[in-house]
Amino acid sequence: MDSRNGGGNDPVLPEEYDEGDEVLEVIDLDDQDDQDPNDDNVANEIGDMDLENYEEYDESEGGEMEGAESDIPDDAEAWFTEHTGSVFCCDVDQTGSGLVVTGGEDDKGYIWNIADGTKVSECTGHKDSVTCVSFSHDGTMVATGDMSGIIKVWKLDKMEEAWSFEGSDLEWLMWHHSAPVLLGGTADGDLWMWKIPSGDCKTMQGHGCQTTCGKMFSDGKRCCVGYEDGVIKVWDLKQTAATHSFKDNSGHSGGITSIDCHEDNILALSGSVDGTAKLLNTNSGKVLATFSAGPVNSDIGDTNSVEAVALCNSHPFAAVGSLNGALGIWDVPTQTLRHTCQHEVGIVRVKWDPAGSSNVFTAGLDGCVRLWDARSGQMVSSWGGHRGEILDMSVTRDGCTIVTASGDTTARVYTIQKPDR
Image (cartoon, rainbow, N blue to C red; front, side):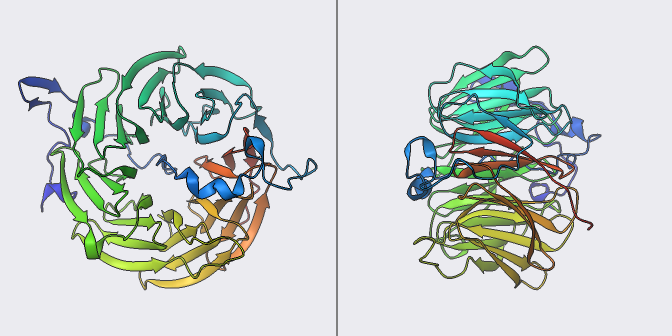
């Protein structure tokens, strides 16, 4: 079997490689084989969002929704209010430390306690909106990245800067599942991979088009990357080469907004502004199915752009959420639509319960989080309190706590009373 497609026993990265006259030592990710790369079931989905899609919902100063009332019921258990602009991104440390990191329009990142919203540390030195934040797999480091291309890594034991890099405009950022390796995609289309804190790096050159999102497979050997022109590439991280490229008839007709990868290391799901999601076999390079986001509901908006996709690792389901308010629950083996869960506003985030139930969370432009039963298609519960649109959502490993980032300048923490599975 070709090791580029997940087979074979070759190390993921060589101990050293030549790049021109320069030799850089790079971590051998196979040294991490004794660790379970699936420990972090909550993926760090930190692809950059096209914020222009949300402008129609940001009618008043400060990102607050038009007509918002001060007496909106607030279901949050804790709040973080240090940001002075929209909060674009959030991530929860999955090791159980109780820490959250957020980034915002105020050019700042903050680390804070999930229990009470108290500030732990400020991530300084950014020159533009902080749009990417992520904890490392072992919870020892956190990365923050801004739109100008400044990336900083902070050691959490001392709350001090451990590494920094300045490149071209940053689109997304994520950590390896089981190694101190950071990956990022830039507006010029390149995919970067750094060993932290040494900064040794590899670069996988794009095709001259902006990369919009990326997701690593659970085996840690490959990464699925989406581009503004609708192309999806599967990159081998050892060979720094694309093993498959989905484009033209096998790609999307519009920019890629989101990607998810199944734990089987074969299936991937992509969402696009063209209103479709595609189920991909990344070993064969074939498109298995195309899922529609449904017809445009003019009462909600004029676009059915698929903003969020997610594959369930415990059930054979796929979730597709659109800016037109439709959440489609698809059966993967039969490639048929099970349910359409209609929202009255656009959906910006979709996440399956990481604890293994058939429940799926959605975050909407109305500032609410909803929990749906994928088997019945019925809404189980909902949580509100934001005065602006939700822009990002992170869920703890046990599926019992949600953190949301909003255009109302706050982040909120919701505790989930989970129903029986």
